[in-house]
Amino acid sequence: MNWIDSLKNIAQHGKPGKCPKCGGDNTDYACHVISPEKRNGYMDVWCNDCKRAYHISRMEVTDNMKKGICPKNLIY
Image (tube, rainbow, N blue to C red; front, side, top):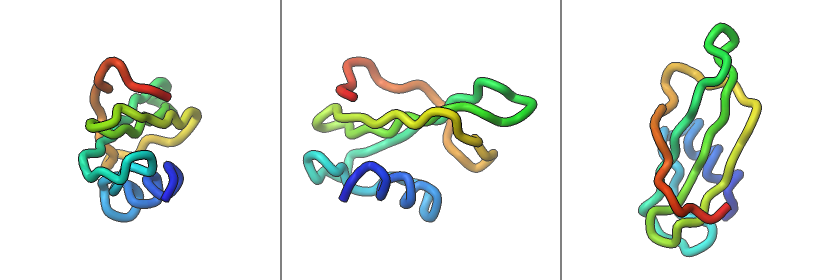
């Protein structure tokens, strides 16, 4: 599994699934809207156990995607 699989899981099930680095289930994500009129923004996906993360920029943030703040000390 890799982070792209996590993105597919978010699109299909609303959650990232297992961490591709440590295999843990304690994963999360948050989207940030930069351009509200176009709904453009970015997403960060991370593991709360090993603190590994992945950043996706220049994407459309849909209404059903989770918005929020990322934890500090993530390793990208």
